[in-house]
Amino acid sequence: MEPVVHLRGTVALLGRFPALAGIDLDVLRGEIVLLRGPNGAGKTTLLRVLAGLVPPVRGEARVLGHSLPAEARAVRRRVGLLGHATALFEELTAADNVGFWGRACRASTDEIEAALGLVGLDGRLRDVAVSRLSAGQRRRTSLACLLARRPELWLLDEPHAGLDNDARDLLDGLVRQAVDQGATVVLSSHELDRAQALAHREVGLAGGITTPPTRIARDTAPGANGPDGLARGKAGPAPGVADRVGAAGPAAGRSEHETTPDGSDGVSEVPYVA
Amino acid sequence: MWRDAALVAGRDLRVEARSRVTLQQVGPFALLVLILFAFALDPARQTLERATPGLYWVTVLFSALLALARSAALDETDGVRDALRLSALEPAGVFAGKALAVAAELLALELVLGIGVIILYGAEPAGIGLLVATCVSATAAIAATGTLYGALVSGLRVRETLLPLLLLPVLAPVLLGATRAFEAALGGAPADGWPWCGLLAAFAVLYSVAGAAAYGTLLEGS
Image (cartoon, rainbow over all chains, first blue to last red; front, side, top):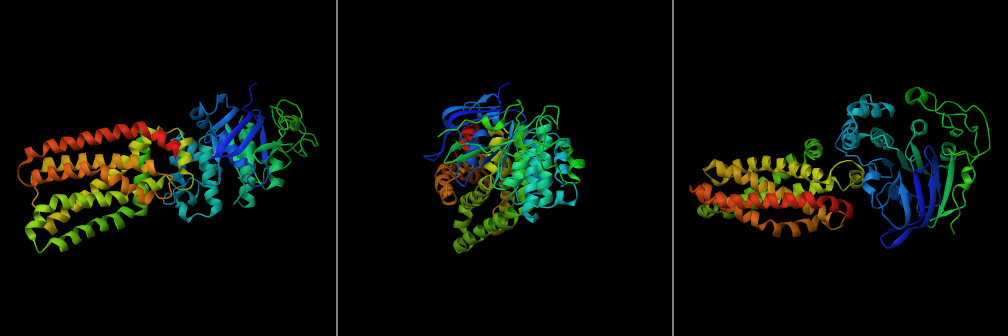
């Protein structure tokens, strides 16, 4: 099976600065991969390369079967990027914003309404102007925009930032639900406890190159959580979230072993590039 | 493409309706310019009447700069440009939608300014068909050119000052053609104005096609 993400020696520039200096990375369908590293390590640039927004200038880069940068437009239509910027129009309501971005991605009215409901914006908040929403509510609105487009590859840049605990639980539940439905997730986060609980494996980045990955302790047994045999992480969905989003069920077993969809040890997936 | 254009135009017009910038700032600015011209030229009433078409279109052009800068700024903020690139919207549709929204705002503004010159300058409307055709053609030309140049300067720190500097010389033929067509209509010789109106229409078509073709590249490059 072809990986959803396949990078070999990928170099990308920000201006004339090589923000990625030769990345090797494979991500299989259904995986949740955590990118970790200090500020300036290249996490955001890597996510933008995977979204088709920053063109790689050297090396091999394939996302969802499409070669980058040649087929960037085809990639963009199939990925969803939740970045630092919310891409919301202050004067419009939450429903207007989700409606616009949803229709811009060919989502139906039902899909847009469902997305609003999933993030808890189906009540009075849906008709409140974004300028009057809190930072967390704006983040939820952005998340609804992402849900409406139903991406195959989720790219989450600091997704937990600015969210309260309930919203973080909601987000984690939505990510797990998406993975259950066949999506793949690459995320970066400085909130390691929560992100590690969510991820199947992690990839270290420093100075624009991958570093030796760290093993993640697991509370799940291989094959315990889904038909595809994916481990789901030790943090289950918060009370109420499972009902709302249909998140993955509780872990059936406990293990300290790392798994990936192909059943191999996930930490060995990424070779060390020095 | 037209579906995308309708979506983007609807968004831009909705943002304008909610923010009321056009209603509360651009409109009053345009009327203020008309009034200042009237103050400056009132002692020579004949000069004012003779200069009415030119003053009208200069005022429209200055006001259009505000509307165009605002339209371009809408897609500048907070990751909107990246989101547009990630969407399934056709770049030509985005261009058409933005230009249509600006054109709608300008047409409303021109109607208000038309009433303004009748009241303030004593202009007597004549050759209504030519006046309307000139307004539509010139507005389409201004909106298409301005939207294209707005995308061209997007991402630059000096875009607010650079846009008028680039746009005004390019729009000089529009100012000339629209003024001449209005002079012909108001002077009771509309037949003399139609060639100018044709020039405006050709200008509008040229920049609409160029904008639709180039907008995707500009969206990528900014």
